[in-house]
Figure 1 (spheres, helix red, strand yellow):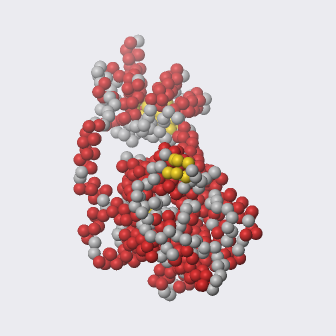
Figure 2: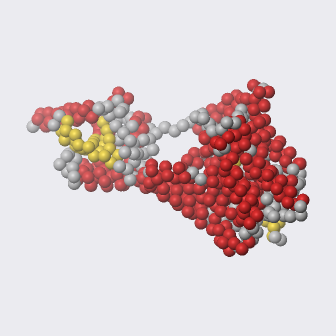
Figure 3: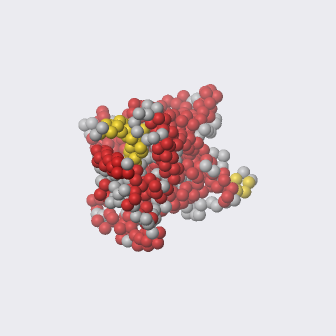
Length: 613
C-alpha cells in the first residue's frame, strides 16, 4: 500500500487545491541528449570493452593447465562435429563438405566474443532442415547468402537490444517447434537408413510417402547395418554397464558418433577391397580447405540470373525465421549451461551474428549453438572458449587430410547418427509437464507442432507466436474483477479490485462489468471504492476515459465513487484528463483510514447543512 505522506496534497479539500498546479501532474520524459551522452561514455568504458570482448577477461590468466583441459574438450567436440557436420549437410540437401565448412569459423570467432565457455557454434539439425526448406530448389549460393544476412540481422538484434522479442516465443511453442523438427529430421533419414535411392525430400509427409512408394528398393545390408549402428549409438550414450570404468565410459559416450562413423568407414572399405559395395556410400567429398571469398551477391542458376534482390526475395520468410531460431537455440543453450549465472543475451547475439557473418566468407550454411556438442564440451571439462580453437583446428585437419576417407562413409551410418541424435532431443516429459501444469498451454504446442509438420518449420513457429499473442491479448482484455463488501463504522462499502492493469484492450470490458455488477447484485450499496493497486504506469488514454466514464455513470446511479490505492503516475495521468476528479482520490494505507476520512467529510457536509438550515 502507498502511504498518504507520499502525496502531500491528497487529503486537502477540493477548494484548498492550488489554482495553478499544472506542474504537479505534468508528464515527464527522459532527457534524450543526456541519454545519448551517457550511452556514448559507456561505449568507451573499460567495463563495456570487457563485456564486448570476453576474451580479455580470461586470457591474461590463461595457463598450461587450462590449455590441457581445453585441448581435451576441443578434441572431443571435434570428433563429434566432423560426423555431425557431414550428416547435417545431407539434411540441408547440400554436398557433405559444406557441413565441415560450417564447423570451424564460428568456433574461432566465438572464442573472442562468446560469453559462455561451454557453447560450441556450428551446424545443427534444426538449422540444416530450415535451410533445406529455404533452398531445396535453389543453389548453395542462396544458403551462403542466407548465412551472411542472418548474421547481420542477429548482430543488429544484439546491438539494438532487441533480445526481448525472443520472449514472445513461449515454452510450449518452442517445444512444439523442436519436437516437430526432430520428427521431421528423423523421418527424412528413414530413406537412407533403409538404403532407398529414389526421392530426395526431407519434409515429413513427403519423406514417408517416398518410403512407402519405394519399399521395393529397400536394401537388407544397409538396413541391418544402419539399425546395428543405431543400437550401438544408443547403448554407448549412457553406458551404465561400464560403471566400473567411469573415465572410459565417459569418453566412450562422448566419442560415440566418431566411433560409429569410423567403424562404418572400415567395414565399407574392407568390402570395397574385396570387390563388393553392399552399402550406399557418401561418395566424393571436395578436397582441401574452403576458399575465403565474399558471400555471393548475385548468381546464375539453371540458366537464370539472380540479382541480390532476387536472391533475397527467393529466401523470403527464412530471413526472419533463421535468425530467430538461431538466437533461440543459442541463448537457450547458454542459459542451460550457465549454472545459475545471468546470461548476457545481448552479447550472445552479437557473438552469434559475427560467427555467421565470418563463416559466410568460408561458404558456410547458417550456424548456431549446438546442444549436443555443448554437452560434450561441458562434460569434457572445458575451462574457456579456447576449446573452440582446438575444435576448429581438428575440423581443418580433417578437411585437409581426411576428405578421401569420407568417401567410404555409409549413408545408412550417417542416418543412424542423425536419428539417434533426434531421439535424444524429443522431450516427452516436457509435453506431459505442459499438460499437467496448465492444459490450455497445450494449444500453442499442438498448433506449432502440427503446422510445422504439415506446412514447414518457419510457418509453424510463426503460427505458435501468433496463437500465443492472441491468447495473451484475450487474457489481458478479460481481467478478473474481485468484488468484496465491507461494513466499517456503519458504512456499507463495495471494493472493486481488478487483478491486472487496465489498458485499451480491457477498459471497455472493465467498465461494463463493474456497472452491471454494481447496479444489479450490489444495487443497495452506495459507496464504491475502486482499488487501483494493480494499475501501473502503462494505463493509457482509453483506460483513463473509461475509468472516468465509469465514475460518472455510477454517480448518475446515486453512487459515491472513490479511487483508492492508485499509483502516483496513474493518479497524474487521470488528473491530466479530468482535474475535477481530484477529490475522489484516496491514498490511505489502510481501508479504515479511507473510511474515517469519508466519515469526516460526511460529518462536515452535515454540519454545513445544519448551519445553512
